[in-house]
Length: 484
Image 1 (tube, one colour):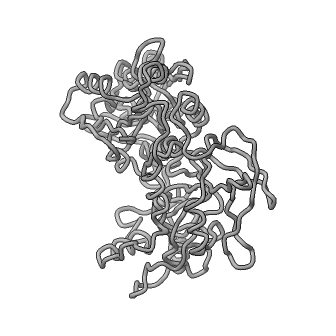
Image 2 (image 1 turned 45 degrees about the vertical axis):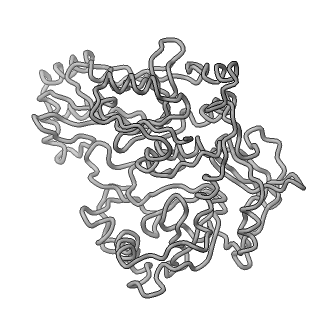
């Protein structure tokens, strides 16, 4: 088990704002209010549910291979010819969100770039001039079907520029890019609905998200290729940064990637874009990697440990920005190799499968309900804005634990000196503070990676002097079983 310490990171700013007597007070507060959040390793988890199922020949949930029918239907949905046509209201909403700056992303507040400066008129005009003009009768009708040929980002507008908001507040700024919707792995099916004026961006719909993708990351797929890909067996990736040595070049694939496989030649069909006509071709690859297996893999202790180990410690990334994962993409990639369907958004994920409401229940009632009805390594727990995998009780201390990608924990400081700092933050360029009622100041305890923690993750914060937290268990709303 590992622990992380939090030590009053604001002292650097405070020394320039207050006199020595105030600094001594803050130094004492710093020593008395340091907190410890326990992080755990894979070997701390209790996998006895798998052993128990084997001994009793109980394959209801564990040591079984799930039917991937629903998963494959959802994954390849963008290639279906019977996609419903968009109505006028849908087109209007899409136009605002993806084809304008002022009516879309900047309707309520402006965007700030990576240098923490508000978008200039020139920046906005460059983006706006690259977008299609007002919609006509052919707006957002399928241009052609495609497939991603490398890891790529789905953006709200056709630009690589960051869009940060409320940059002085906690939980804002990097990595929370409001233009970043998700990362798509290689081999993701999609339909192209619009093209930017410079033809460097495609507006697409995948099963996970709509948005703008760089055109160089997409190959055109023929109807014959669609039939071939959907009918062929698949392989899935169980680890990150797995190297595939192709005939054209080498590739990296990640947990949750799904690729077609030729059983006759024993080769992976890796999607590549033809340089002559942008059409899909395959780089046929043989591999001996133990992290690439026939899809779906069985839900066994060995496979679960492998996938959890591969993602543990990976950096937190909102929407997958800069190569990491957020909470919902972590669960999507975890469940994919097992053929268990999960959408991309946490709010949609919590509604998949059998769901049990945790609302209007006390913390003790929620604990008992999770303990009695939660399925370790299969159940998810949701609270607004966050979703986690329930992994059962720790085998050493019996505490209920969760596996999740987490940016940070909300903390509320109740001391007058920090309140004074907040009043001066604009003058001194101080970030990461926000005033709340009763002169409390909101900050963040930064985690910034995929971790295993106690279910009562914020307990050390609540027990610290001068600190409050957004109670994690109190805000839990749903216990879900995606496999049911």
